[in-house]
Image (cartoon, rainbow, N blue to C red):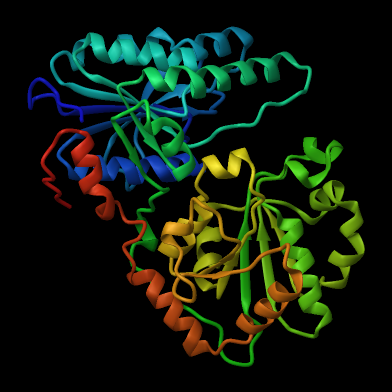
Length: 416
């Protein structure tokens, strides 16, 4: 349990490579977490990252975003080798901008997946001002054997951060059972938060939508991990196995079951560069599958809401065991049940035929039969699942106020 020396210490400095307002999944997570901290009475200051060409290396500036009621700052995304090295040791610009202002007021600096040395420097900065250094740990990249300076630096940083520095922080926020188990025996101050979702703006109030009976059911997928650099090593390194989904749907297609599958985040051309052996399969389903590539977030959310199901499959490996799939919690929060394989990190939150449908790529006959079954569900049955998702508080920040309040050594004074 953390316990500040005075109740006046109520400022949380939240720093990381999130790109506000919603340019990456990290931004979605930290906005919901910030809402949780705010509801417990803390003043939250967000310091994210900007890729704007207008910003100079090392620059930090205040920023405002519609619909975000937190004080926001952004630092320049490192463009030069020197800037990268300054970034990984925690540049002094953040300390200079906040040191005087936070004297006697800082409760904690929360480092979101921050470089190891920079994270340790941030902890020392927080401790010097009488606050705590907290690491938020949401990923663990596997070691890469590529012989490149950037890869070697990343491998070293991952080792230092995950196996040494995180153990030295005052507290940890994890995102999965796997990470919680790994740190729990040595870190008494730890709380596990899945990726929480706070609907905002035009999507704050939504009504469930399901396809009418007799109309092909709509499936949705969105992913950003289809890096063409993986083409040399095949699809085995992919976190989201879209190839598995398409292979199962191809079996469904051959059995004359109708559906409409919309894919965001990758074009058909890039997918086929990565998996050229799927060309004939993709062409055979051209009237049932549409690749949209990268699209604005509002477009994705509108399509997700109007879909009958979202679907994704993940291979069990270090990165998927350590992280939490934002696409799982986001789909449920926006009222769309998820078709997926069972992973340890989603198991506590998964309810069969209430917020999800379980399939297993490695049990293909059973999974194909199950897909055909759920693609034939009535509009009423799908609407019941969608209403169950929308009514659920599973991924609302309100459901996690108590454990966070306990770790922060604070009575839960939750207020909206």
